[in-house]
Image (tube, rainbow, N blue to C red; front, side):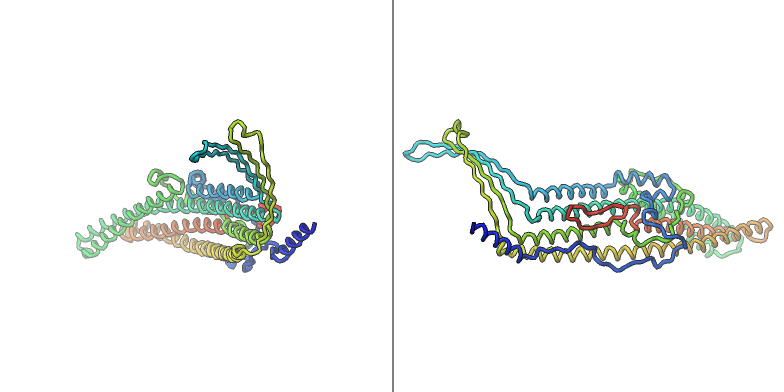
Length: 473
């Protein structure tokens, strides 16, 4: 009785001396963001679930884009790697949980001996052993919780990769269509300049212009031809990039030519976007789950300071004759308790876990701050390019009017054919600038959707002793 009492007092003393306290998990503090400095169109504030639909790329109203996204999701290898990592993280939960389960070992053997002057002897043996480290303090459970949080972080990594993939497919597709229109417009511009060259050569023969003017026009045609070759190269490079995104070998997939401004509509961006849309961002969710995982690992390290209890059961038999092996059996039961009175590794692990938690907390804050900048930049770019579009559209309209008037004057003999060619060339240049602006607006919208986390549901990360880690809203 006295022995048991002394043992109990020792356990209580060691438990009292060890600091195993863990405050409730709290999200790391970050600078507050009430709204976006870039003013948006007036309107009622929207909620996070209604701001961006889960299939937000369908807002561009392009069936070809929808098909490309579906192919990319099914075939992209980056996303498949991330999905495989989810399976690894899930298996690691089971590996962590196995630490609380008993282990069973069984073995059989035989020994043969022959000494000088002695008879040859042989002996057979059979034995089993059961070991069980009882998780009375919840140390293993803490490790399971930490790995469960890492699993959820890995899921969020997959969502981030999914979002990046869809964004890359959309922007690459828009670039290809832009190149197609640019190539078509460049060919028109080149043809106009060849007509101008023919006019210059006729004027040169009549002594109306110097030869330098003809040479200048030939140099302009050389420049336009070089630009056309460069556009064709960029179109092929973008096509190779799209093939890789789709999981198809580069060069084996060719996107049919199309016209960007006719095929792809610019979706409206909702007014009153709330700042809590950032809770959708998978990279922020992943960063916070890793904070939670590190927090649980601190708890596991602290619990390692407490005594450990293990149970060992042994059983076996031995015999000089194989037929008599199972006639007798010996059993043993060995409970034990181990006190970590002095283990520098335990204290070192606590400090390491605490330091690692500070790292992931700062990484979380860095991710949040980066998201603020990405959204602000996307809104600034979108607003600025919309204003530029208005100016470019007005420029195109004015040049259209000028071209129409010069065509009428040409019929009356008031202007030369050369003046008409020059005006049409300026008009084509303005139309190319308007095309580039349209592509930029589409890409800005994709960037904004991506910066706001796409259409993923809002995730609240919270510690839970019962193993729960998040609620998808």
